[in-house]
Image (cartoon, rainbow, N blue to C red; front, side, top):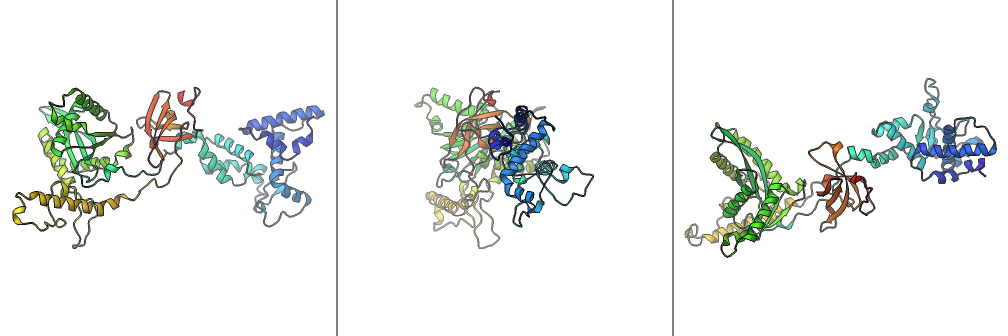
Amino acid sequence: MISAATLTKADVLLQWIEGVSSWERTKAMVSGLIKLQHKILGQTQESEPMEEASVAIFKNIQDVQFGEIVRRLQSGIDIGRKNQLRKLSPFLDPKGLLRVGGRVHHAKDLSNELRHPIIIPKGHIANLLVRETHLLVGHLGQQSMIASLRVQYRIIADTSLVKRVIRECVHCKKYQGKVIDQYMAALPPDRLKSDLPPFTNTGVDMFGPFQVSRGRNQIDRYGLVFSCLSSRAIHLEVVYDKTTDSFVQSLRRFIARRGQVRVMRSDNGTNLVGAERELKKLLKQLDQSEVSREMELKNIQWIFNPPYAHHYGGVWEREIRTVRKVMAGLLNEQSRSLTDESLNTLMCEVEAILNSRPLTPCSDDPLDLEAITPNHLLLLKSGPSFPPGLFEQSDVYARKRWKQVQYLADLFWTRWKREYLGLLMQRQKWTKVKRNVQVGDLVLLVTEKTPRYRWPLARVVEVCKSEDDLVRKVFVKTSSGRYFRPVSQLIMVLEGNGNEGNENDPANN
């Protein structure tokens, strides 16, 4: 039999409702229990069932957390100077609830709940009240929620609780959550190798288009930037149309002029992926004994960045912006529209300007060496920083020219190690190790060409760990397919338990 003591005994009711996830459902369950109790005891229910349920719940949690304070107030004893509720001047209302006394009890035009809100301790019930308020205010921010809560309740440490509820809200994550970031990775080995010919390790990307005149028509042309990952030298080529064949032709011109390439890095553009596929197919079909010049292409290791991972190609992305800036200045000097010939000339001029840029900070001290530039390695022209050394006059452009060339190249790499590499050590952002994305996590997949409310939900199905055991690339599954993405294109919605999604996965809906 359910007795009245069952509802008033501390902990019993709270343990019973601990697993309920909604404030309205909690009140409904307790209300049903009260109705059953009145029916069994043959009593008449005088107040509203939901209101009586709220009073029963609040009295229980106050008895558990503030039992000593309640007993002192019932006995007319001061609660003590060091009590945590001292500043709230608590008192017991006629129903036995602990309320805030405060200093505004003379504001008769305000409701009693607003003048004397119920004191709610931290715990499950406080969490339910904050969640309900978060829904009622339309997922607004922290201050709006606190203002709405304090109309009826005074929750202990409500600020931290409100922040946590907002942080864990799935709806808020979908519309306001930030993309995932991870501790910045170490630079790849091909960016740190010295004593190699320029463009041995190269990054490549396309930019444009540029309008050129052909008769009475305007035709689009594109630029192709090759960036040496070590010396930061660049090489520019004109691509005559945005196709795989045109890209392959530009690549062949680049290799013919700059020499063998070992590592080629690029974004995951359609034309660049097609170029690698075309080259591999070409190499399989060609007779290597007849076309020895194509043998060089076989040794190229082509590394594609994950789709939409622009920061992976920061080296050449930054240089493309510089190319655009220099080209804009040079194009302003053109009194006539561009032609193919003038565009090629313009590309060569931009290339020369950018290869003259300093790689290290410039000093105002006349005794310091001038800053090294990519041209010091490409052109091997001596300057204040490249003294000619002990050479005879006949060595300069004679049979022993290679000695001076070797000396200048060695001097460039010596200064490159001493002055330039130190600039790459510092991490400008992403300096903290974060939780690794795990299989089973529910995420929002950022798609740059669609508005945020249309970004699809996805489930992480596979992770790719780096050498430092951190996850920066993952495979995700949406309702439309499986995708390879960097974590910077994901927004965490719900952390999973490390298992793959099932048939009822929301990412499949």
